[in-house]
Length: 366
Image (cartoon, rainbow, N blue to C red; front, top):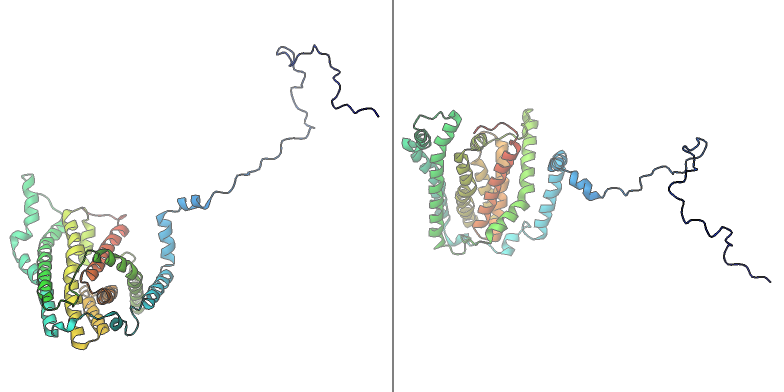
């Protein structure tokens, strides 16, 4: 049987060149006949779809805030339910949880002494502010300094002039109020060493965390109060409205150093005075008299909320009352005075920051 050749025979001459010389004419036609089918396959996009991370990168904070605003009430209800569940599971708000976790020894002092200390601290700010406002040279301090810098009387905006005149007495009153509060705490602590008058640097981050935990409850109470007001009066509350006149002045003149001095006082000084007066002294007086922690928490929170009814808008005092309840619970559980102070400071800073953000696109007078 003959062998099958493994290669094809080469019938071409050996003297053919390896390639066609460049000078030879091209025998291929210049154009392709129309009758020939197109051998090129249709173009298809075989690229994979963009990853989800690219879509997230195109999502702005404004888009997320718009979505959250559209479902605000539902989100707050869910978050508040989660917070309450966590507090219940942690034996913080269950019946008898205060006794199981250990009570502050508020009964080391009689209720009348706690009330006296609360009255002294509470009266310190308005009394000091009143006497400071009576001093004309303090009211005109800012105007005089601006008028003498250029050698000519300066033209000051009337609203800015009012802010300057109100800032100096307030700052003096807050400073004296803090001094009195610290002094009373040190004095009372000598006779009530286990009444929760201690402080530690770890209380400040703890207070920040507890404020974040309480924030859904505070915001939900505010929204429900506004909804009740609108349903009762048929008068809608404008979005982003500022209910506190001092905060409105700060927003109108946010570029002024006087406004930032007031912000520092509101965030740092006011929480110290109010928490010492309401949470430490008033709440302790009620607990000392009744041996009922929840009664002291609720009553002091109601008094704290009533203090913020000066502008006549009751719904603005509801979230403040809820803040008081949260601070009271935290104080009874942590037994350190600086925990509710830190929570209160975060609340004031949050409100100012939120108001500045919401009004940043508006016209601010400086």
